Amino acid sequence: MYRSHHIEKLMQTSSWIRKMFEEGIELKKQYGEENVFDFSLGNPITEPPQAFFDKLKEIADNPVPGTHRYMPNQGLYSTRSKVAAYYSKEFDMNINADDVIMTVGAAGAINVILKTFIDPANEIITFAPYFAEYKFYADNHQARLIVLGSDDEFNPDLERLRDMINPETAAIILNSPHNPTGKIYSEDFIKELVEVLEEGTARIGRPIYIITDEPYRKIVYDGYQNPVIFKHYKYTIFVTSHSKDLSLAGERIGYAIVHPNMPFKEKLMTSMAFSNRILGFVNAPAIMQLLVEDIVSESVNIEEYKEKRDLLYNGLLDAGFTAYKPQGAFYIFVKSPIKNEIKMIEHLKKYNILAVPGVGFGKRGYFRLSYAVKKDVVVKSLPLFKKAMEELHFIK
Image (cartoon, rainbow, N blue to C red; front, side):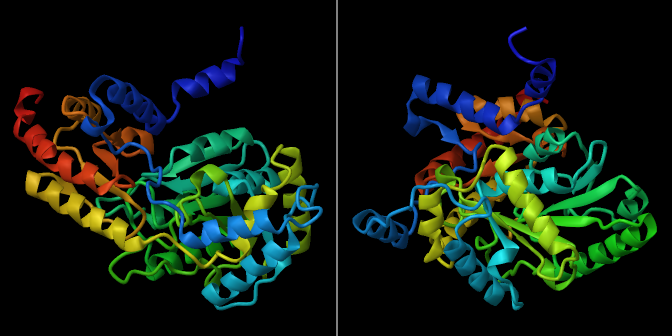
């Protein structure tokens, strides 16, 4: 056997997102890139802001001895200090450098966190639809991902959550703005969630952490604001990356911030730095840490995403589809007009439209479109969405 049975099993249930992305590569070879409408992958098409390139040039033109040597596993103190200063203002509380750990993207941060406080057989709860990689992150640490369903507005049943909490419950992973729906969980929802977790923590005699996964925090529309969970719950660890807000997905730079008032914080941070090392990340890349120091407050042009959101959302409605209007991020979750959304995905492929079925996010009957694409892709696809809807009776 050339690979482990376990990896073989995981690969059989691997991400639909990557599957559709790879199919898109083949379609582009066959029909030409300009004739394929690939909405599968949340891969930012927008270039990083000019401040990124200015800082990159400054670093290259003014090399500092020691920049490329080993560093503390928690990351450069100067970077952590500037990240802490930004979020102290953003969250309206005192965060310091020792509350921050620089990581290899948000994915690295979540794995470092889970490695630190998850024991085998512990349970991690998330809400459907959910980012599919969470399942694999949990498996990395021999934990179980427990998925709680949601209603048509993608609100989970918090009374059901109350019943699900048991002595093995270790954490909730909360993603907002949300992939795949673009939903932002409201302040009232957060307060209700925290009430359930506080009751559960008291009942089982151990803290239930919230891992708040927020790489889309700056990508919001129509005056919406993402609540600050730190204000409501001390057992919170904030996770983000600059893959989306600075379009640096290929650079893998992110961080985790532990609530400044969390009990045993110093021991937790020491353990997270240790986990960062033994998981093989060791530390986040030095150049990327230096780069984000002075541009942590920057972002790409959010209006460009909003324009594409409006074009795609309104075009889908005009074609006869039903969709949830995103409040943030750059995805639209569309209700499949036929029960089996995988058949719908195959139908769309006839028009060279690539989407990801809801089964890949734990929510059947929907499909996801990422509008992290060129505006021209959206514009040219709309007549084809309409045609696909008109000819749907052939597969019903």
